Amino acid sequence: MTAPRDPFFPADLSIRASAEPIKIQRLGLIDYQEAWDYQAELATRRANDEIPDQLLILEHPSVYTAGKRTQPEDLPTNGLPVINADRGGRITWHGPGQLVIYPIIKLADPIDVVDYVRRLEEALIQVVGDMGVAGAGRIDGRSGVWVPAHDGWVDSKVAAIGIRITRGVAMHGVAINCNNTLDFYEHIIPCGIADAGLSTLSRELKRDVSVEELVEPSIRALDDALAGRLVVSDHSFGSAPDPTKNLPKRG
Image (cartoon, rainbow, N blue to C red; front, side, top):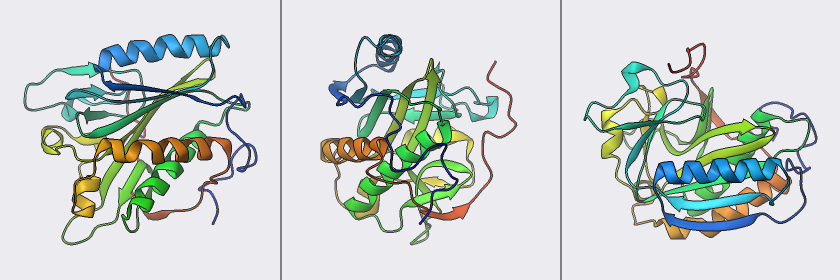
């Protein structure tokens, strides 16, 4: 197996600038704007080498967030408000039952954004696969973790990724659909993708999968992937157009 493209430095080396252990913060259910402000504070302190790398483990109350490539047609039809975020990508939803992890990581030079995203994906692919979801992997051209079409369902995303890197420090991160509702996605074009679906681990495994069940496996897998102990492999089972390519940034 090989990575989707060769990284800037060996795949078995850490992508982190520091060898210190990552600090884990369990924040529980926290407002999106409050968590965003806290991330920004931590990212500044990490850039100044005042604190170690962090993993923020949390859930959000129900909220729509729009990345920098969100288009007017993506926006919700149910009248609910949208927070304009400074991450990449288009619009998505966060809410209870979805595990959100924000790595605040100072990246090693040379900074390789694609490799960082692929390592996050690799960690989530391992977690989802270890839970028993058969065939979970990548769709080339689209970020996140996907489950191949089956039983009348189309290819469906079970985990999403959206990041920002400032002064060499990554913030924002990943969201895994555990036992959350999918109803709120029906009122937007999630991530700008109209030709695919969304799923949850509970739906895929036909049992209730709680956020707490995913926390420890996700922490371990992210730590391993960032350290180079879990090497990025080719888990692609399809390809599709990049939903952000050549789009203007949100006004």
